[in-house]
Each structure stands twice: as C-alpha cells, then as structure tokens.
Image 1 (cartoon, rainbow, N blue to C red):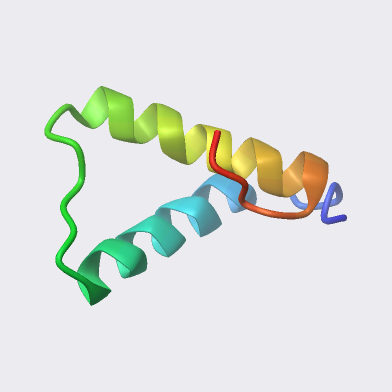
Image 2 (image 1 turned 45 degrees about the horizontal axis):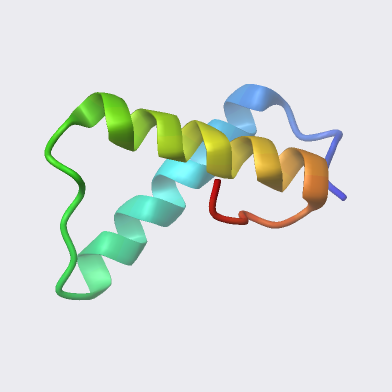
Amino acid sequence: MPKDMSESDALESAKNFSERYVSKGPYEFFPEQEVVSEVQKGLAENHRNKGYRYCP
C-alpha cells in the first residue's frame, strides 16, 4: 500500500485522476466545488490507507 505517499501527493493524484475521468466521458463535476474537493480528499485518503481510490 502506498502509505509512504504524502497526503499532498495523494491529493494531487486523486485530483488528476478525477479530472481525467471527467474529461474522457459525458461526465461533469458536481456544481459545488466544496463537495468535489471532499470526494477528492476521500479518494486520496483511501488510496493512502487501502492502496486503491475506493469511492469515499
């Protein structure tokens, strides 16, 4: 598991992942940026703790 990944690196990775995901399909981010940020933080935390970006 990538626990040695810093929180900032994990968050940047989750942001990049979610932005690529949205750009590849007919998707949009939720209109409230605060909600999007919380989901991205959850993805980053799960990536660090469980090794995968499980949906928070």
